[in-house]
Amino acid sequence: MAVNGINGTNGVAHRSSSRVVKPGIYAPIPTFFKPGSEDLDISPFEAHVVRLAKAGVNPLLAGSMGEGHHLTHRERTTLIRAARRVLDAEGLTEVPIIAGTGAGSTRETVELCKEAAAAGADSAIVIASGYFAGVLAGHKQALKAFWREVSQESPIPVIIYNYPGAAGGIDLDSEIITELACECPNLSGVKLTCGNVGKLTRICATISDPSFESLYPRKNPKAPFLVLGGFTDFLVPSAFANAHGAITGLANVAPATIARLFQLAEASVSDRSVLPEAQRLQGIVARGDFTIAKAGISGTKFLLEKLYGYGGLPRKPLPPIDADVAQALWEHPDTIALVKVERELSGKLQS
Image (cartoon, rainbow, N blue to C red; front, side, top):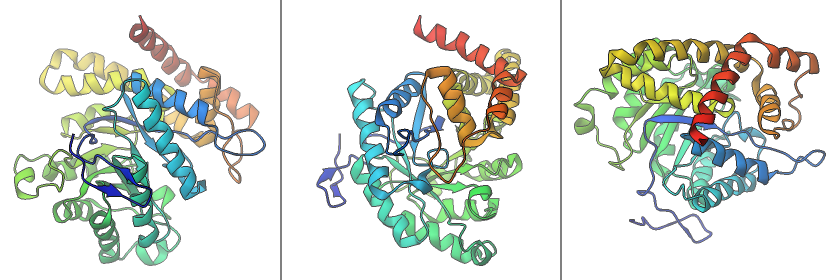
């Protein structure tokens, strides 16, 4: 495998061409903390990364679900190294790692991209800071300049993270995203946590056109520009729009189910005989996504505790989920239906 030099200052070689983000399902992995101290709890983190990877779901570290905003630079790189180490130890050497590298300034974002690459990340995902959203939200050129400079300076490909809820309401439209994709060869995708299916369709109309690759080649030819949803409630429609999968918090709770839905959605584009099953599973997943997403990070961690025996609390000042709300979430028909399917599918994987 080719080695494209040494990144960062710690002498770690990063094989930037060996692993790339491909179409599929990615989960923003929660960061687990030790009770009381709130220090990183690496053991359940490693177990969870492996559990998901074996189910066909790839990791995104230090994202919104991973409380990246609450992590120091050192903690972010600790998580990346731990994930790479445990994946390799399990023989999952080709599983790529996406790392959240969003920060307040362009300068710090670039710094985080370089640190992530040196630690073993294969791609970065970058959100605009919402602190000065009042200035940035309506300033198209400033927003484009941010991702242009970050992608130019990053040693690994960069994914645009469009999440208005975590960026002070900054919501990139399809025009800005498409222009960035055409103008910045080290951009390798977008995650649309805005949940806008029309926007996804418009972007795919350009990105997935056969001419795009030749007109706008990527810096790394093996890392194409991917259009990824931020939820799983529209995986089937997005497959028919020629999108490339999703980065979704729900895959932490039901990895085998989400991976199976993606497979069915992709297959149904050319084989209509599997479309009814894809639509059936899509309905279960869409209802589960709607219900569980509202419970946020603390709700996801609660469900992981119930299902797998680890989860814990978010880092302060995020509050834990209220006990009554947690019980209602666990007993909700949408959660019950999703957990039932997940247990059935994960049992087949293990048998």
